Amino acid sequence: MASITPDAAQAPAPANLPLAGVRIIAVEQYGAGPFGTQHLADLGAEVIKIENPNEGGDVGRVVGPHFFGPGDSHFYQSFNRNKKSITLDLKKPEGREALRRLARDADVVFDNLRGDLPAKLGLTYEHLKDVNPAIVCGHLSAYGRTGSRAAWPGYDYLMQAEAGYLSLTGEPDGPPARMGLSIIDLMTGTTAAMGILAGVIGARATGIGRDIDVSLFDVALHNLAYVGTWYLNAGKAIGREKRSAHPSLTPSQLYRTQDGWIFLMCNKDKFWGVLCNCIGKPEWADAPEYRTFKERLANRDRITGELDAVLQARTTEEWMKLFAGKVPAAPVYDVAQALDNDFVAEQERLLEFPHEKGPIRMIASPVRAGVHPTRPAPAMGADTQAVLQGVGYSAEQVAAMKAGGVT
Image (cartoon, rainbow, N blue to C red; front, side, top):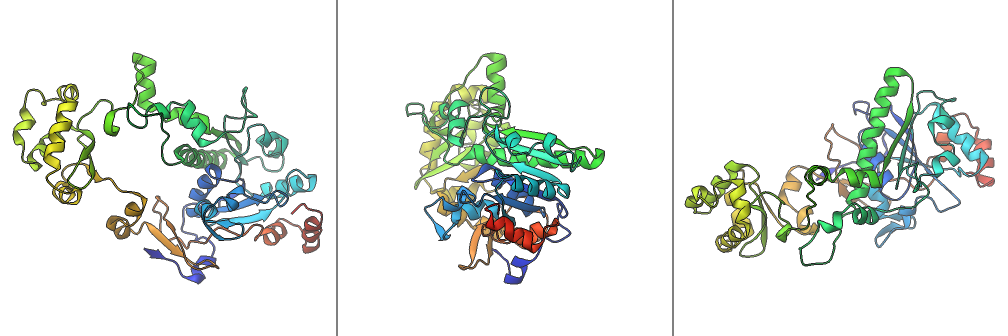
């Protein structure tokens, strides 16, 4: 596990990180938006999180059931490390004026609000281009900022339902089932980060910013990918397959072992022959009914029964040692087993860093770009004074704004 010293936890992002010098003003809360900007903060961007002091700040602070303290949940820490926090009520004119000052020296103003709100709060390119023509205004909403659903609230599970995911997940004879993770939130946040970076590259090349939009619905639909192409061009709408099987390839699904399950994916022809040799059934490789993808798919149920019979002779761990590096295979773990996995430790995929309540352990960024002195997510408003004074407010003005409920 990578460990961060207390001194490093307080240090600014090192200059050698790829996004050092990029400043992002983020009007965000809950999951999708903060997940996207955390990607950028992990890569060195200065992310200044704006929280409304009159509405309790980021609602993620109170999402349980696990807390480090009041207003500091495990959920909130999972999406907001390496950021700063200021309190600012954008519903007040003084708050919107402060945002404009912040935008002057920023690369990005980002929000994950309901689609009709960015324009009302002055967060669009049209509202901010006069103070910074190169500003990139990123918007993450449920259904987009235009159209009949612009004012609709929306959440991950709703997108999974409407975009067809529940019809693809689970066993064929079971009820519709969602994915176990909030995968649309996570992928929309990641997509927003990509869009923001594209906007910044364009603005630095031309001096002209723009609005960048992503929505939960659009990302959920886009993720249908080849499944959507099959329907749109061949009229084939696939459904659920037994044992989480690939819709057109086999063996590519769950199989029983002596003590549980293993997932095999022979998604290239060569792996079928390798698998047959590894399990002591070389004759299967050239059997007429198993020779090609098409023949194996036509005989999927038979292959499933025969592989179950062979694989139940050994434990999942024993098969994994035998298949290692030869047959694409994975054990079926629960979350605890996944995080306690020896490979996770070997690759230093877990972080431990200081927090006032004691060390926090989290999952490292998947983008490896050098050593990062990780800081815990900020207390609400922890950086208000420093950030606002940095854009020209005096200490007395900041105090007056606080007294007036602006910060």
